[in-house]
Length: 130
Image (cartoon, rainbow, N blue to C red; front, side, top):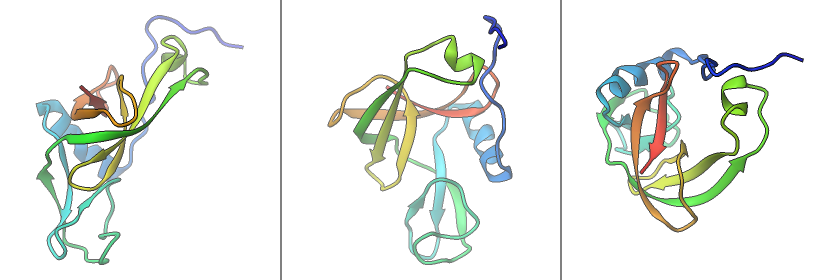
């Protein structure tokens, strides 16, 4: 069994589309894909719209207001970074514009939150609720 250190970093694996979020996270701007054909917001990032199958998705500034659907506290992790910080609260947040995001932060079901896109300790984009 390996031991963890205080210098552990979050996992860094991301898809090519997920990497596009990084430029927005570096600026602290929440952007999600929006379909030009049907105007629906989309998450997670994809090549075609999950609603109308159009390939006209573009990154747009997105309002971050939403409601917490549920909360779970992570009590076990195989990743050293998370293990060192347990319990780790995770929220399921339905944005007012439609998509459901899984975010880091503190909150309870029914609570209104504002979701921000930020960089974590490994410089990867993550959603956080305030």
